Length: 216
Image (cartoon, rainbow, N blue to C red):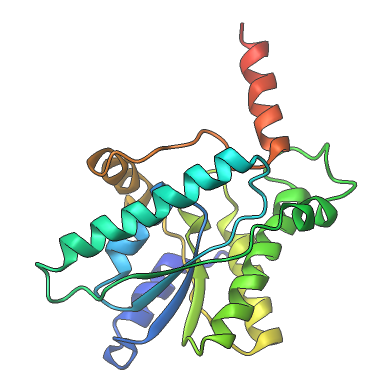
């Protein structure tokens, strides 16, 4: 039976007892987080956790994390005129690209969206859940489900497994629904954000470059 994770989140947010609770939000990048932050910041006290060891080129990593910080600063500035929006905080995790390479060893040839990506989802979500518990957050979740290229069902499955394992509540989501992905594109233009065309790992980049070459 297919679950409607977007509706599950709406129901949770309709419960006023959850308003103002703390959310530890893993972000993959500024563009994907833009709509998620706009959508959730009036309900949750959000700490963005930027943890992406899958970004395997240093220059790309630091470019993306600076865009994330710039977006949060801009959204907080905009939010000062909106008393209903909670300020957004950010914590940058360790940049552990060797951990990513070790985790996906033997899966280098997997196509994007397959088993290698599932391992990567869990790598990032596990650290998010661990840090959420360490920081006493009420919930944790990720922006990853906003992408049409990401498997929202698998991401939620991993999140719920980690909830049971680590004892911190996972917030269900499918942020691409309700025109979330479309809105993220609009906000990216509004804030002039750098939008990358691959997830960050070298294997994804090579696959994209190969597909582009084959079209020539």
